[in-house]
Image 1 (cartoon, rainbow, N blue to C red):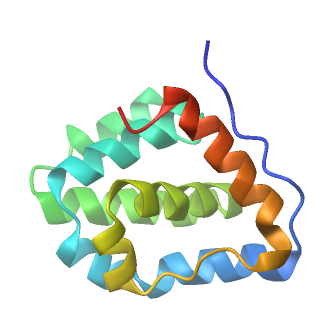
Image 2: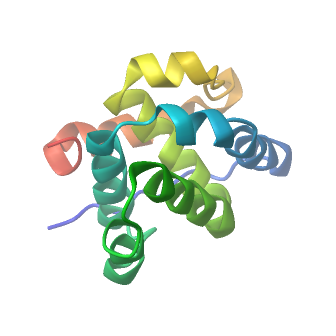
Length: 130
């Protein structure tokens, strides 16, 4: 049984900030992300029903090189909006803390602790990061 993230309602400003954060780190993400992290993020986004199987395949099968896979992944996340951006940021933090830190990603503001707690609760059940 899969658990789908139900992210608490966040302010529009916060959601725009998360999309802006993903856009801001796009170039450096493409340069620095490793192949195993790309695969893991794809699995996380698929498990949370942000990405379909076809989306995953368009990254892994249709793109030959790691940088092209990273580019396709981050562009798809940006295109899918707020929830996808929030999940990707959280998953990146959990999968590769060094990359998360190097990119200078900003954690959720204190006012949005509910979303962070919900993400941690669902991911700690072993549904992701395996």
